[in-house]
Image (cartoon, rainbow, N blue to C red):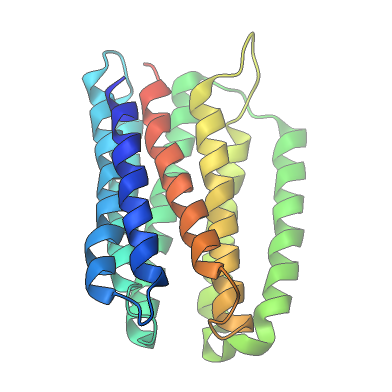
Length: 232
């Protein structure tokens, strides 16, 4: 499968990115090369899924566009001390999550998966409680960012909810909903660690970069690969 062939290149780019991030001082010029390169490879994984016959072009197109907004967010978040670019990056990822929500709903419709009320309500309550706990933990350090962060948390929680809602087990575990759900959950973890590092530890959380970027690129790679497993 062609998309899988890009995983070794993604691992190399990620290693080079983390080497640049870990230098003292931080090698911003190298980060500007390798961070977008990692995301571009994930976008290519998504696009290559269309080389396989019978794949859902709507789901692939939505994931592709969502990943492009993630790329924009990646570039905007490279400068760590620029509040304006941080806000623009937040908006880019917010739009990306909204598009992922549409993609997961489209995939569920393509598969013809019926709604499971117990799972929908259970997942919704769990995410509501988790988001509330995280928000009130971060609230003292949010300042003017309280409303933007609240909106962002609501949207990413809905994105995870739709990914979980699309997961099911039949005669076997279908790979598309499994990859989408795993990717959405890792995205949630990545953003949680990023928020804790920025708003609770003032950017001083030990090994935060490894946790944030490791879970983030794993997340978008899994979401990108999920496009190879949705059949019409």
